Picture: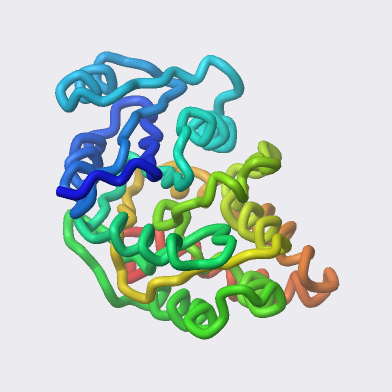
Length: 266
């Protein structure tokens, strides 16, 4: 196996996820070998046990917690040119790192690279449903434009079509960047919006190379149910549109909340 010295998977672990070990195994099964480390703000025997089992460094966030605090800490733990913030409930197909890093190495001034994704629902891989079709349609312009700030902002003006755990960051692009703690649900959309203003490349791979798990105990589900999601989505839409138009767009966009209901198609 080829060892890649310029890429790190930082796996954000939280509490006692039953899916954590499966995520670790998917990172170890990559076709190229990257650095892997675990970061957490909730250290416990479960996380420590898996870190020890697979001989992975474990970093404890004793500063600002919460999703953005954890992500900012995760980035600070890595010392490589490229960084992927892996989510404990998700899985990465073996070619993920090799495909994305090859694209970033060839690009001029890469900012992020991301692939499409599939969903994991009730233990099964789902490659086609309504929400996935919509997001792939939205991402279609990225196939033809890597460096156009206008095009990527037009895509983002319609919603967040970029799956956060499918993203690999250039550490150079993150030097003066922090995830914004005011957001709990749209912190990734906010990140893409701010990074979209930078000069450089947004690199896109249309092949689904990682699996995002949908389950009822996820933080996404919790934020959807308590109304945080709808509030933050409207804030983001207002960055691109006058308030009346943003409110109109928010209504159909909010139907995406159904995607976390396991009783529905998604």
